[in-house]
Image (cartoon, rainbow, N blue to C red; front, side):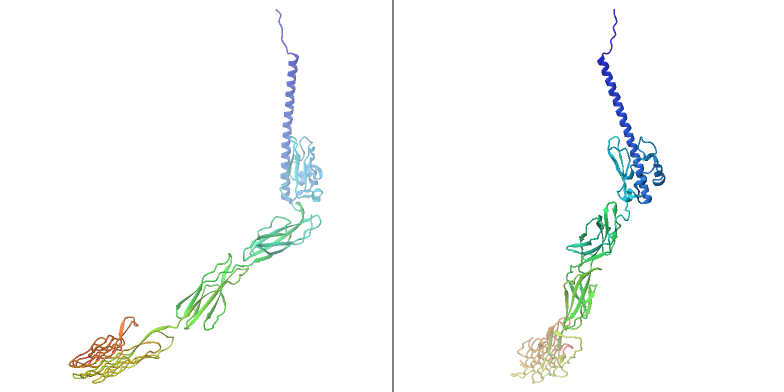
Length: 570
């Protein structure tokens, strides 16, 4: 039996060889990408270290190094510029140590460069001098081909790059409904642009801070009444973000928005606490926020006195108002003000007090008349009450007044005395008639004496009349007559009623005195000036209400009640 051995065909061998080739290529490519990524990480770390060193340099020097310094030998940079830095960070990967991989004179990268770039601000001071205002560090990523940039954290101004302008002048005015600040333009050299910043404050307070630089020549804001607005400005001549002049600062100018809202008229009230003084007070008016009210008042009288306008911050004033029959007036107006402005004076409010002439009630009562004498055979009439005058409101002032108080009749049949108040006269009551006589006339008439059968003795009449507009009170007495079996005296007239006749009666009845007039002037209701009752041998009459004395039968009649003006009994 023959043994055979199987092997690979030529095609199988070729396939295996091809697979091995592909795997080898993949391995080489993968390994190359890993190496490129590692080198990119190193470049990133180097740029980070350099950037931090540059920022530290800025902290110490207030600027960044010039282009020439960054292109020096790494060891020199590490010892003189970025002190303490590892010189190796200036060399890109796979380049010999000691090589500075930064392009000279701040040149930028090209697409093919495996270099570092330190790109400055483009100024001469940066390119050929010793200081840059900013920088950009660049390198190209090997794995992606992208350019990576790291920008400086600060920029720094180097004085003298552009000439400074003159200080700007700001005009501050009303801008319709607001405040308008306008800068007069400054002049810059060719190639430079004037830029401005505004700063503002209100009421001389704290400055708000400058705005950002711009070419704007105006600034506006809403205005509030009574507010002071201050503006100032800075100007510079601008070439680029890294090249501009020093700032020129102008003086402050101001504008005050006036207080234009006038307050309302104060409401004035007059309060008189006693007859001599009146307090005029008014409410506090409302002002715009930040403003305070103040007032002016003027005191005038109806007799022509004018105090003149006087300023005050108070809300009341007191004046003497004691003179009668005059009107006293206070006018008040208000104004709103603050440290910067005052409004116009507002409309006027006023109040008045009239000091009236005081009036009093006056009751004048005269003395009552005496009753007529009577006996067992004869008879006497009752005395008439005193005349009465009453005035409900007579004007008086602060002075003395003449007063006379009349007494009653002092003897049988005599009239009472008159009472007076100034020019007011109340007449004394008429005396009662004595034997066979008529009664006397008086304030109130006396009653007639009793008469023989078939005859009469006449009564006295009232003589009271009005004085100074007062109301007079007084009535006649009664007739003296024969009454059945004897003489009967008539009653005296009262201030409110006639006296009763001896027989025919009237008034309160036969022989009675007339009632007096009723008044509550003393605070209690009372009668005044009642007539006295008549007397005789056989009969007697009662006195009238108001102090009239009773008549007597065959004797002397009663006296009138004291201080009433009543007539005595007959």
